[in-house]
Length: 124
Image (cartoon, rainbow, N blue to C red):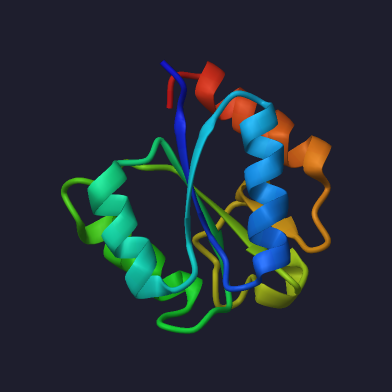
C-alpha cells in the first residue's frame, strides 16, 4: 500500500511540483492551500507525512504544526518544512525543526525525495 503525503503550500507551482515528484515516486498525494485546509485534510486522510510551507494564509506552518502535534490523530505524523527562506533565517522562530526536516525553495527535489524514502524506510 502506497504511503500518503499531505502537501501544504499556497503556491500552485510548488503544489504541482510536489504532486509530480511524489506521484512519480509511487506515493499518494493530497494537497492543501491553507492552514485550515491542512487540518481538515490531515484528519480526513491521515497522512504518513506532512510537507508544510512555513508561510501561507490561514495559519503559518508553525501554527499548523502545533495543531497537528496536539491532535491525537496526527501528533505522531512526521512533518517536513519548506520555505523561501533558509534554515538559519528561520531557526530562531522554528527551533524545534531539525535541519534534516527543513527544505529551502527552490527545492532540491532529489534531496527531498531521498529524505522521504529514508523516513519511510526507517518505519516512521
